[in-house]
Length: 178
Image (cartoon, rainbow, N blue to C red):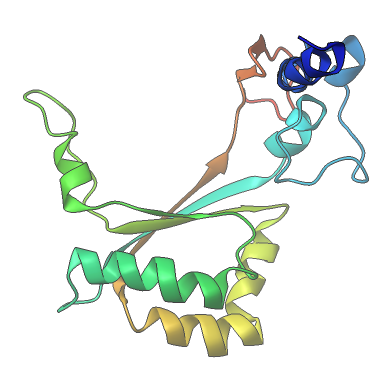
């Protein structure tokens, strides 16, 4: 084998080794600056920043007369094009078949929602302002009317409390609970 061929064969290993998560350093326990992180960054140096934001989950069902397949297809192929740039994170969908996988004797009741959206915001005012944003009000809500039953919407708000990050125990947090 030529030396150049041998060296080229090692290239994937080199890339793999450099992508292995590195242990958390002592300096990583300090909260990162806003220039280094945003609320959506999952770097170890950003753990405290992520814990400082509100995490809101919005659950909803499909509009009456729409099958789960139609709901999922519309969401994946149409709504993501409309709302993708507005929603900075991701949506979540749950089919009846997936929910059935959770149904076991003695198990907890399964939430009966077809979809969910998650938001991480620095203040509740930021989330509330979303509803009055002209693009959200005029474009996204109009598009949601094609496949979402707005009367089914339910929300929950909380804070992420990160216990393990990059396979390391997190001992210092961005928020304290008493």
